[in-house]
Length: 236
Ligand SMILES: *Cc1c(COP(=O)(O)O)cnc(C)c1O
Image 1 (cartoon, rainbow, N blue to C red):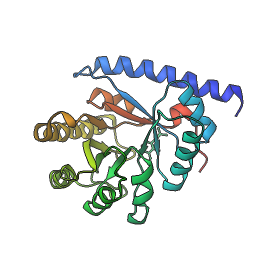
Image 2 (cartoon, helix red, strand yellow):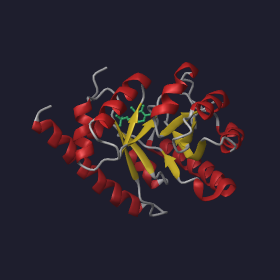
Image 3 (cartoon, helix red, strand yellow):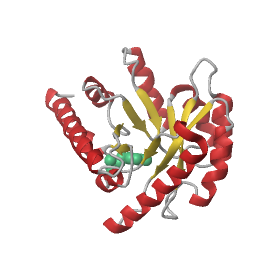
Image 4 (cartoon, rainbow, N blue to C red):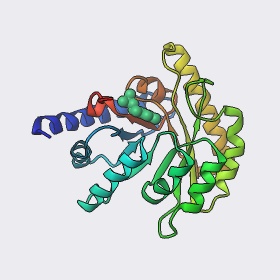
């Protein structure tokens, strides 16, 4: 990777942090907003460039790609990074996720939660878990419906090796700004219901990507998941 590319990534991070600080202060909760750098389909060098600019949280969608990056970066001494699995998770891949990642944001089924709980190594802290909610009832998106959050949250909260931290959503594509705000606002209500039941351990509402980060933060997101605006376009 050329110096120019890594400088670009680092400048993007500085700009995003600044924007998030301002947006967080504009939002009604004045909450600080954590930036998750979504590094899927970007190189290890790109991750390193971000890590050298003090980026801690990274998101990956594909198990094998993610595990390779985690292992290589640990071998090179990047031990402080927190890795979030954010893609669809099949049951035959749960073991790798349980062994290598720090967070899973895409839990939508009891079966997956049960396997992660069983497969989490005992020498590691509990795996941090967000439930993925399909708030727009979009047929093309994974995630559970709002009505099912309560049951799955109860199940996860009883798993010794999982720690329920909150909720995640990906909105339907192509909706209006007002529709996006309404959906994010519904998420925030669900999140507050979870806080009322489980208290302070519920501290993460992950919503907003490069294209809808502003509305998400104004409606209460305290974690945004940003790929393109940090690393540039992905090759598909
Ligand atoms: C790819 C991805 C992102 C990042 O999307 P950008 O538009 O590149 O910012 C965020 N969340 C999830 C779940 C993703 O799969």
